[in-house]
Length: 248
Image (cartoon, rainbow, N blue to C red; front, side, top):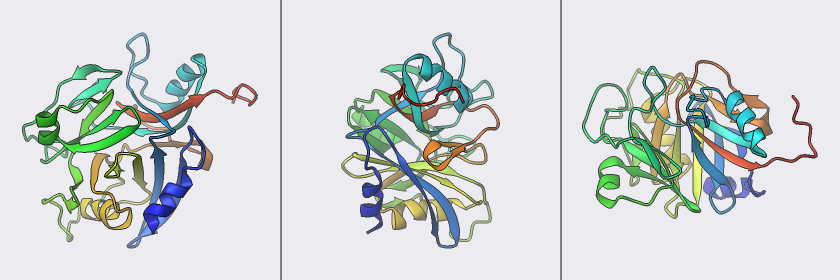
């Protein structure tokens, strides 16, 4: 039932609707993209090669192109210089290669995965499956750990975990037509976060983006988070409505 409600939210082309929900005592903001109508892209650097870092800088750059940013969130882990930790592809060009070996931190907590955006489709794909199938992705960002893998929670997630953080991530439907982005509104464990995607949103695959640096830009609910500079950003763009006030 809830999946049907999420689908109903995407009622306008090139727009994403966000809703606040509660599940198992925790609070989340859930935003769904419809890949049949929404122009979903990844962003990292401007034309001069400078990392955007903030939603406001990306918004300003898009306005110069006659576009507006309808939705955005941080989209994967990065080094101190904001360069991607793992695979990062933007408009078919790779800035960083796929990382398949285990390592420190959440990114290296295998299995991790890749968020792949192709024409009218988005998928969360486990890293080794991505390596073996080489899907055609116009945009791709690698992060970790996987939250849900073919309907199962990550094997390292423990119900009794005491590691709680604000977290954000993305899940995709089996047909690739829906990408559902979630940011927690209170600190949650990995087990709680993964369970939301699997048991409430009913999504077969989901990927963790990051923890306390998680940010959301959702003008429709009057939210645009500031804070530390980000690395990769995923967002929905639409033609700028020149009849609206864009000077604010």
